[in-house]
Amino acid sequence: MEKKITMDTIVNHCKTRGFVFPGSEIYDGFANTWDFGPIGVELKNNIKRAWWKRFVQEDKNTYGVDAAILMNPHVWEASGHVSSFSDPQMDCKQCKQRFRADNLIEAHSKGTVVPDKMTNEEMEQYIADNKIKCPHCGGFDWTKIRNFNLMFATSRGTIEDASAKVYLRPETCQGEYVNFLNVQRTMRAKVPFAIAQIGKSFRNEITPGNFLFRTVEFEQMELQKFCHEKDSMNIYADYKARALKFIEDLGLAADHLRYHDHDKLAHYAKAACDIQYLFPIGWQELNGIHHRGTWDLSRHQEFSGKNMIYTDPFTNEKFLPNVIEYSIGADRLTLAIMCEAYDEEQLENDTRIVMHLHPALAPYKVAILPLQKNLSEKANEVFATLSKQFMCTYDEAGSIGKRYRRQDEIGTPFCVTIDFDSLEDNTVTIRDRDTMEQIRLPIDQVAEYVEKRIKFN
Ligand code: ATP
Picture (cartoon, protein in one colour):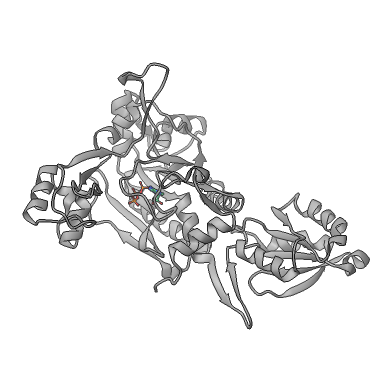
């Protein structure tokens, strides 16, 4: 089912309602960087909280960490990123546009040729033999392929020499692998157990774009489950199911989601699957679940010289654990959730823009709206009480209808209106964002009413 909204609609809505602004905007921006505004930061934090609750808090065998972004450079040698985290880049000499050679071949052959298995020379030959033209200007004048490493390098210390070269991490999971022994020992963890983390990653992508979908700096929410090989395929299947259930529970419609099992696997991988979402730009990866075998721990064992072998306390069996990885981009998921929630609803005499966000994710849970300015004292009291428990906003400017609309546009599930009766009988009106129905409640019952309706289970 095609989604009707466009990415431009979402970008514009985000910018004008305080969700997401272009990065460094007063300096004309900085390509593919975005700043979360006051509304967006609440939404993204709520998404991260929901993920942590589901996969860490509610799972007694999962432990959280928050590892350093800058790691010992040997980590990236062990992981293979220094030698092979690169894309084959080609420039059109006529229009100076930059492309990935593998993408050019894939598009030309309509997926019948698998460039991952070709050397750079073979890819150049294929492009020459098939006269693949520049998709931008139609020219046929390519540079040779250069391997473009996607890691951002910087230097540590005051002297810039090769020994001080460090990298901004291109993925968070290495922080879990290098802490496998620490976590296992301090938490007395028994395999199978997982280490989870939410944090920033950096990739110098050749073709970033599509708003938050592909950026050079993004947050990952991911976990690595360490397990015995005999359990690994069941755990892999379990995370496939749990990953799908999580995003459905957050409000993504089942018919906008699908599994995409990989045919091509990394040499060490035993299975890999993405869950794709129907973004306004089409079906695209939202998260990945990978069976990584013993690759990660064996490489760190080899490069660090530390023994990573686990001894099962019951059977005394000694083995190197397999790893099942589940990884989802917090920004990409925020984008998917905004695309799903955005609605232009046709009313009798009007259209309203409304974000049907799951109440647990809504930036503000309650908007406090005094009907008139001279009711502000009472309204401020209500704000002071409710804001101890929930993110609330206060608005006394404009007609009540306009104020409701403003809250609909940022997805606030409840509007509490204070009127003259509130002064007499301590009751208020609560308006529901989705049904627009209103009920009257005593002020001291509002918190309980809201609490019940914003739960994420
Ligand atoms: P893609 O194929 O889209 O480049 P990937 O397979 O390289 O993604 P992983 O390395 O498995 O992605 O990262 C896990 C998740 O992190 C992805 O599913 C996605 O949600 C998110 N992610 C990866 N790269 C980016 C990026 N450049 N910008 C935003 N999110 C990203």
